[in-house]
Image (tube, rainbow over all chains, first blue to last red; front, side, top):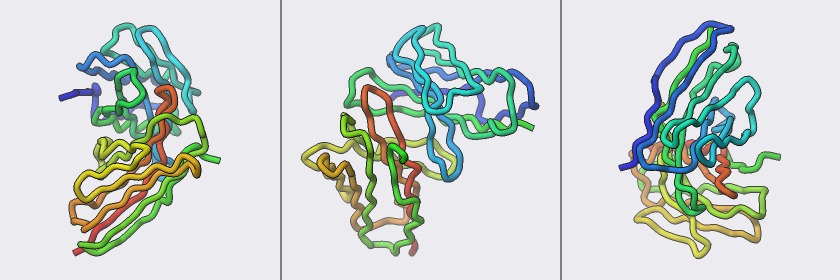
Length: 113
Length: 108
């Protein structure tokens, strides 16, 4: 079974703090993704990575950065957390070929106060 | 215009009913298509891939219409356990785009 894990299920941070969200997958997938999910808006892509050290901006990259130093790990960084970044953050991974689906981690619910 | 659009619902149906969801997408070069299911406070999980010829998995049938750029999901003989949000996903070059989801509640 594919396993995607995220470092925290729940996180509370203060405005202005630097926040790190970690995602690890164990299936040697090339592609990894970070989404945020908000009510009524669905999943919105923040960043994705085709492979190690590669990254592409998604729809809403502002206020976020990412790091992929190892194939199995994809980190999302909030440089200076703001209250509008309170959300559910979901990490996903997939094989590089088109026909295969994504596998999701359990999500991190981040609250910025 | 959103890249992937779904009716948000909610759809409230009795057990045993047949229910259908549609999803439209804007990028005609999209390459692969999926339906995911998301339970409350859980991560999305693959329900089924959608193939050009249409495909069936038990009570679930998925269809793709490339000319009109929509995909559909039909659920027959609804069960209480089918209550969830159903997400339409469209893929081009591994850029996966999600619809906002359609909420289904199946009632006794």
